[in-house]
Length: 237
Ligand code: SAM
Image (tube, rainbow, N blue to C red):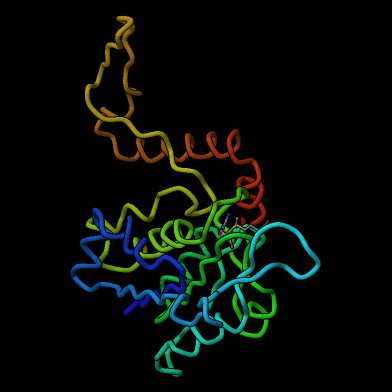
């Protein structure tokens, strides 16, 4: 079973978003396990500090390497199990759907959440944390980033989604964005009294034609919105 172990100074932020909807149901049904480790249990000195000022000067505080090491050593897991350690940081490699797919197959994913200015680089290097970013923007801490990453991973675990076929054609499968989707009403009159119809093919009942239309729309959308993905698709051919 997929086991997420979160190293954080704010364990009370979990499960947070992960306790809602399909993911929350999967957590209740023990389709995955979530554990938090409070970094403050491993603080040093009389003030139980977990961070200190950066050498070389500059603003903010840095999470101490000795605190991170003690927290990591407190984790009790079978060494035979498939385990990876990641540190969430905007300075990491960008996560993507394929990466999340790989994480979702692990037995244990250990996630270090930073705060303030980040984590002492020695802890990251010596303890073999892979540096992963969830996007090119800076958050205040790793806890929301961990929930984003975990939500993406957990929905890929077999049995979590009610309709697993929804994974087959969604965005990023085959390096494409998903085609546009429509629902009732078939003709929608907006508040300015303008009528908007659903593309006719979708109500034709012709499944071959619908498939063809959706594929073409996927290609069109990807070319316009994510030309980088489209190039990748062409290269993978
Ligand atoms: N000084 C760091 C830098 O410039 O790269 C930013 C530190 S950020 C304010 C504090 C923490 O938030 C980081 O240690 C990390 O755990 C988390 N964080 C912020 N943005 C993130 C992102 N895009 N992806 C993953 N984690 C992020």
